[in-house]
Image 1: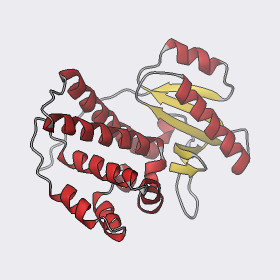
Image 2: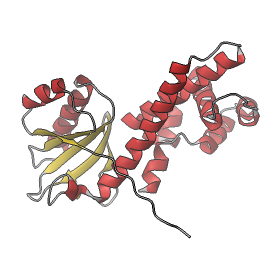
Image 3: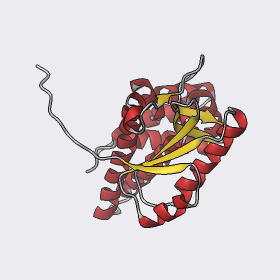
Image 4: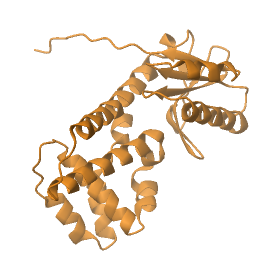
Length: 239
C-alpha cells in the first residue's frame, strides 16, 4: 500500500521532465534550484506549489495530471493541490516581507497532518477491512484494486465487497461537515450501482468526529452507515 500513498504526492521529478517536454526547462530549473530559507520547513512543498502555478499559468495542469499524476484527480489529490498552492503563497508573502500569522502556520501544519493521516488510515483499513464489518474484503480485479478506485468523476477511497458479494463504498473523513461528504458518497454509490451492477450497494463514512447533523443526514440515506475510527500508539524497537 506504500505505492498508493506515494501516488497521491505530487511527483516533482516527473513535473520537471514534463516541463522540459513543453519548452519550460528554464522555468523548471529555476524552481528546482531555488534556495528556500524561512521559518517553515516545507521546501519541497513550495517547489510543488510553484510547479503547479507554472503548469496552470501555461494551461498544462490538466494534461500533466492526466498523463503523469492521475491521483491528482482524486479527493486526496485535490486536497494536496490546495495545500501545495497555499504553502507556495505563504512563501511568497514571506519573501515580500509580510508576516505569516501564527494561525495560518497552525492551519498549514494541520492540513499537512490530515493529508498524511488520511493516506495512512486508508492503507491500514485496506488491510483490515474486517474491523469495519466481518466478512468485508477489498475489491480486486485483473487491472486494479479497490484502493482509490477510479470512476468517471473522482476516486473512491476504498471499494470493498461484503460477505453477500455486494459492493460497499467506503469514504474517509478527517474534517467536520456533512453535505459534501454524504453527497459525494451517494454519487459514488449510484455510479457503482450503474456501472458495476449487483446493486444496491452500501456506503460507509468513517470519521473521528461525528457531528449530530451528519447523523441526522445519514438517517435519511438508506444503505449508509457511519463508523468512528480511534487512534492508538505503540512503540516497537527496531535495533
